[in-house]
Length: 358
Image (cartoon, helix red, strand yellow):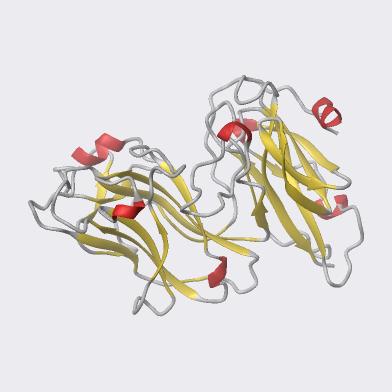
């Protein structure tokens, strides 16, 4: 199977990797270009521009020229001279997660530089919380921890947190920082940018079992990371979706992003998924008969199925859709000719499971 798939790939052109955002149904989006108008800040949270003293230290930002910063503007740390400090950046208006969406996610980028890199000591901690009652009470979703296979500090990193447990509810999210004490607080602090809450028609898998330890950052604190394994351009191929998986009204689109530029990419489908097995520089999570849906060139590292000349995705289904629905798992297999993790010259995105209705 591997040799057959490799013969079907197109040879890529080596170019500079271009970033591309995944396309899902966006329920909320804010890159802070209009300051903190959609948020209620407390403590040291403030809007920071790339031209400000502290913002210039972290430019370029992941999106636009502004971000939200927990720290003292112009000083570039959170040291309040011997006193502990804390603050939160909370959404001002609830966001409703559709009850019918298979999955929902909170995505954002962050830059963290604090006293502590270990969760156990509890100092200078940054949290992500959610509220389902308008902010009366909050539940913690995640804590930033560095050291247990987490991100290295002091770089911009993407974060994704599963919100599927809140389907059918209106939620607020907040970013909360607490020093716990007044010492060793002369570090940069926490900056957040490009916040999105999205809904998707499918569920992601096959994302945390990579050869050579080239797993995308985010586990274990933030749970399973919804991306594929790392490739030679320093990114992690991601497969997401939007639209409706219905044979009668097929608007489903699958989007592969963060691939090597101009890489040959094939969308594969199977009627069953398996536990991840090593496959090139990535992991294969399809089992049974693998059908090649279509091959594309990922211009600027991104591609969408169906493309302009492709038929709807429902036409490629391997079986008729029963009244109860048909579960289909997709995965993108792509070319990566540069030397990276293994001698192989190919990799994979995460898998993506969709339940088709008649």
